[in-house]
Length: 140
Ligand code: CMP
Image 1: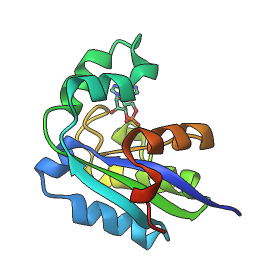
Image 2: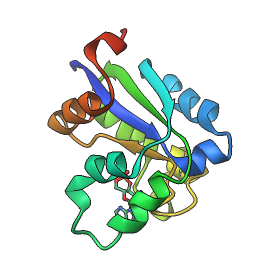
Image 3: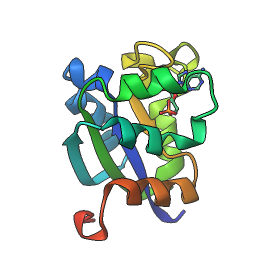
């Protein structure tokens, strides 16, 4: 399988509870390597642009408010089949449906405050990585 890169966001519910280290350990234990990382506060415009694909969804406004409510940690994860591997480690969007041992099963508070975001496909991963990082910021 090819080495890929994917974009991960540790969300405000997780930074608020000081869970970043525990979440990063899950990525590393699965064989994913953090090749870029930044703790930041998203602006309203950042959050609206990043989640633009969801702008017609009923949860969009609340999602944006939640994502600007505290710090996030944006990261590039690298590894064999990293996009699917990250999705497997995160678990289902709704923690009620997430498998045992996944990040969302262990840490998520709700379908919205679900602790992590991860890119869902190669094209999305490329675009989401570009949204936050320059090539120079990514060191494999
Ligand atoms: P994420 O993987 O970041 O992608 C979109 C986000 O919208 C999702 O995780 C959740 O945080 C949030 N969300 C809130 N309600 C829903 C819903 N009903 N379905 C999907 N995503 C939702």
